[in-house]
Image 1: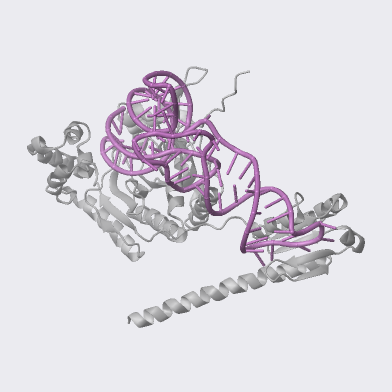
Image 2: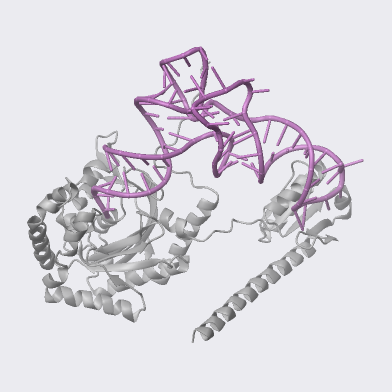
Length: 443
RNA sequence: GCGAUUGUAGCUCAGUUGGUUAGAGCGCCGGUUUGUGGUACCGGAGGUCGGGGGUUCAAGACCCCUCAAUCGCCCCA
């Protein structure tokens, strides 16, 4: 018989487990908590859509549509696409469900997305994003609210160190067109000096020359006109309202007049939270205003603004995560004890203590295991304990061991939890005091 | 799609110019300790050297192809 070959995982997919999973979960939970503070409603969206949903929104002929989508025919012959982003699907839902009646709508989603790209660290073919959108709100206050949400999320994740909000405006349609024309003129004048990549960009997507990494291009880019001179009165007023709002909310930002978006439906605000800690994949969260998108999907002109953030990348930036710990380890000795141990474990779990039974291997080994999973205490049950109706309760920190009945165990565990909470409260206060002292020294 | 680096035990890595039975640390299992952990000492298991082909008396090492990860470019919704 030929040896059966184990199938390999698909390139660019990941099995998320252990500490990685803890990080992932923490990011999602934090997002869910913060999004409620801002009144965003969660939505669950289909993982696949008609290909047209993405082809219309992104442009039928762009590279992303022609080369980077997972598109396929289903058994009925319809062309479907695994979602490469949330925004287009949400806009489709907005239109097909008549959600106009709820506008403005603040929506949030998270889940897997699919792009056929070359995998790298923090860049996968099946990856996961957080997403927030406000649909049907054209006022600058919506942009500000969304940015505050993003800023608070990064703060609460504890990763805002080394992350800066880079902000730009692309103006309204008129400003954008004028600027684009000026850029094309500028780059055409210097065409001979441009890199080959940028020469093709000049024809295909001239705004993208602005973030070219070729050293020669940088010089020409630095001399390129910024949008400021081409902004209409309305457009610059809008941008001023956004920056004013951010300042009022104490959200720090820097202007990056080279920051652009690849698609034509973007208007006004464009932003990225960028870190220096992830190499070339420095963008941690990005978004902007896409007032032109819903029209491209066949709806009435509808203003909208949103952002998305990669869960894997956010997870990589987190401090080390403590793993789920077991509070109580139950160690039965002998078959009779196992039945008793199961019922004890059950009772303790009902009482909201995370409990694990270690019933295999040498007793020594089981004690070591209990220690390893971080249990606060071990409960040892043998023939003597079955007879007495009590259990041996061993505090794994102090080594103290006493015979207790279950209600006493529960009491004891509450005490342990409580004193631990007090300890961490104590160290919080201590570190606060140190901070205050340092601030005092600085003055 | 393009360029570069890497791939040896569960993990982190050694392995001289090709040369006998491929090593270490950590982890795992067992013992010293028959119902009691964190230490120490002793022992053990575990390897398609990413995969396939080639050169050679001989390949983990050299050559070709391939797969994957990583770094950068392209793209970036």
